[in-house]
Length: 346
Image (cartoon, rainbow, N blue to C red; front, side, top):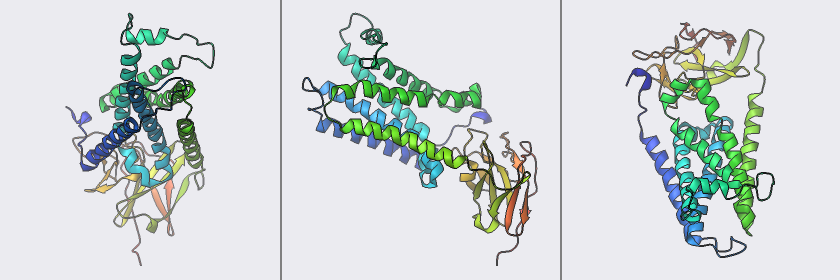
């Protein structure tokens, strides 16, 4: 394995994150199966097999809803950042739960079908020209394919092989997949239940995802302060030692201004590995360390220490009294910039 593909070590935080995820899934499914939903069907009692498929299906919907809420929540409140850093694990587990739901459906409804199970699923209802009675199974299958594709390409190899823009565009398919899941539930399970509780949960989840993304977008559209060349960052003594503040340079560009002892430096906020938020990390062993996967960069030139070759853009800084100003124009990746010295605190 070359230095381009260094495996991410699973520290205690990752083990704890995964353990909590698995425990929550097990607890949810166990409670769902234990309580059952005997009044959920309007025509006949619900048997154990149907309860199992609904347990896994509803769990996958809840998990996908939480996943899509984590990003905007972390941008609105940094206390949610620990959930964001290992979100890929959350996504892979969601795919496993959704696949369990699909297997339960196929094994119950199409176990004795003379045609292959998936083919039987798709030809059982072909009324695509109507709203009520629409083949909601196809929507669920589409969402499952997208989840499986994203889980399979979550490894760093695919990020480098496909290139970051293509990889990012591919993973934006999670949004149409979520829309398909909402429609799948609405046109499927909710048409067959007399209990409004889950309908309210689905509506609340969809509204939460949409509302949080709108709120996050509204915050990100604030215009950067300053004139055409220099942007005001804020008071230098408001930057904690070893940490950074993030400043918006342009519509889709942000810089991280780090304080290291009695000096300040600025680099791009996007890690060269997976565009992780460097400004949410800290300085470890003299290097800016990405909070996502631990990639490091020298603050004075934005270069990773040898043998790694990643580079990020740097920025010029200057002081105007107590206020830190940053040059709006980024330097090419790996450009050395001398840190600015700070006055002694009184």
